[in-house]
Every structure is written in structure tokens, then in C-alpha cells.
Length: 485
Image (tube, rainbow, N blue to C red; front, side, top):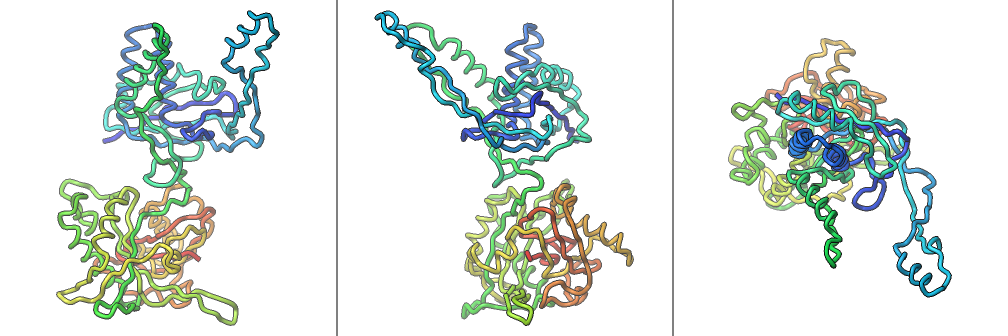
């Protein structure tokens, strides 16, 4: 069983001046910045040798942990960066002028330095770590180290620190480590502490003898993308057009009766090409069956096989509206971390025939990301509505209150973060579709073993959410698919 703990810092002034690798203001402060501050305070200023050894062991333990979740105060770049003038390293020139009897002023040799900062709405940043080990053994040393912190970032960024196993009630924006997009932050890795100690030794000896030996920058770290829990992070996907296998003509299959069939064809093809692939077992990932000894949950990596009905703009009396038509495209959608597996599948599925019960029923043709219809499913939008109905993960017993709870659970099961669920402004559901061309929800044939009430759903978020988006009990096989409005 894993346990969590936090290391917290509180800025004593509402500004942070730390910069990232690209020289721009860094917010939130990277886990590596915290690690360096802990090392400097707990090792550099600790006179007790036993405590130094204990702190070193804790730092070595800390650098082995996964990238932490960060809960940080909101911050924004200051509107008016300030400019200072710092002395150039030309004291020798001024001294030679004085020796020759010429006038020279050191203050005349200054360079402009523009200082950017971020202004904080609150003072706290919390780093939430998770470990399979017992935190209680490390916590006393970690608390002493955190409470010795004085600065994180520049020397003017004064902080007070603490550490605790209690992670409840933390205020701020949640920043999560993600695979793509987001903001790059540095994190420590095994060997970071040793590299810092070596750099410190080299710094102390850089002027020994007659040769200046510059100290190289720290390289023992990794970079991880971080994104807010509310940021529109698209899920990785691959998409294909479904065509007639002999002529190459585009197919258009009825979403009401053929959604489950097309999803089954696609899953069958993926299962065949993935036999012996280099990404491990497929029992859970493709078929949704638990591996031996593994407990499945909402976060268990799965692939979704989504038929995508065509959405066509049509002119009417009241202007242009979008009309839902037949299935002519399909997508395989995964979670963050499955990008490489999906790219492998894309290469092996392109041009492949779809077979069912020994008969070739269709073929897959690669679909460009710029395809207009595909972008209706993959765009970022605040408003979404279903093209195939959602199958509730339970029975509502005719209660709207229970139905809403089940729908919100369906969004949570699909991987939506708490902040995104809390940002839902309107949530509507009914048997009749919200889009022209959709049928009554109960008419759609669900996949085998997928049972529950069917509803068409429309949702509006406070912030943009990126597709592809599918929720409910049939979300892995074509039901509960949304398109952006």
C-alpha cells in the first residue's frame, strides 16, 4: 500500500524570481529547485555530522521517488519588470587606469539587467510525493530539513518550509506530471545529490594553482511536463477512414445498428496486430480483462475503439447546423503514456483489412489530423454533446438526482480530474438527441455485456476540454462518444 506526504514552502513575499531552463520565469518552482534548496540547507549549513549523514540518506531516498504532484498558489508574470545595473567584471581595467594616473570610475562599468518575476496570489507551494515505503521513518528528518529552508530560487525569495504526512485541505492549483504538452520542469534523479556535491567540490577548487577551471552546469536531472488539472490535455489517438476493401470507396454505416459492430471489428484487428508487440500484455489494454493478480480500476490503462459518425454542416432556414450521418471513420484512443504503442499500431494498421467471422468487411485508410470531421471529435471546446448515447454505469431508478450522480461518476471514471468536474456549468441528459441526425437513445444497440440506461448528454465546462471524449459503461466500444459543438 502506498503512502503520501508533502513538502511545503511558503513565500514570505508575494513574488518569485526563479527562472527555468529557457530563462523565463518558472512557476511553480521545479522539484529540482526544491531538492537543491533542501540539500543546501540540510548539508551546507548543518554542523552536526550525524544529522548530515541522515539528511544525505533522506535526499538519496527523495531523488528515487517519482515526480511529485504540485499544489501551488496561482501566479502571473508581473506587468512591469524592473531593470537594474550590475557592475561588470572589469576592476582590473579601472585599477590600471588609476595606476597610470588617469581618472576612472567603477560605477561607469555597469550592464543592464532586466528582472522578471511572477506575482503570487497566495504564499504556499506543496509538493506531494507518493511512496510504497513507510513515510514515518523518514518524516522526522524530512521535517527538520524542510524547516531549515530559507530560500527557494533567488536569494531574495525567502521562504519558510515544512513537511507532513497530512495532505488534506491544500489550497491552490494542482499541477500534474503528464507525458505531452504542459510546462517542462526539472526533477531530481538517482545521482543528483552526488552530482551536486561534486559540483560544490569543483567550485571550491576552481582557483587552485595557476589555471582557472570553470564548473560545468548540473546535468544529473530529468525534465517532466507538468500541466494544471484544469488544462485541456488531449488524449493520444490514431484515426482511420473506413473504406470498401476492393474499390476503396468510403463506407457509411448506420450508427444506431452498427456502432457496436465497427468497434468489434477494430478491436479484433488491433488484437491481431498486437500479438507479440513490444509493449507488454494486451489482455487488459485491448480486451479489458484483468491480468492475473492485478486489480483493475478507472486509471488502469485501456484502449478505446471508437466509431466516429460523420458530422456534416448543412444549411437550413435558421442558418447552418451540423448533421450526424453514417460511420465513415474510426479512432483508437489511449491514455497518456500510450503514445508509443499507438504510433506502433498506426504503422501496422494502415491499409489493413477488417475481418469478422472469416469475412473481410472493410479496410483502414490513414486519416490526417487536419480532417474536418475528425477535428470535431479532437478539438478543445467548452461545449460537448453526444453522437452516440451514454450508457450509465448503474441504474437511475427514474431519479434525476441519481442520474446526475451516475453521469458525474462516468466522467470521473473516464479520467476527468476533480477540478474539471467541479467546473461543469450545465449538464443535460434526455432520451432524444441534442444533435440533428441522432436517434432516440434506446434504439442504439449496445456492445455485449454493456447494460444500463441510455441517455444523450450535453455538457458545458467553464474551461475548454480537449477530445476525444467518451464516457459511460460502453466508452471503450463506441458508446457515449461526444463531439464539440
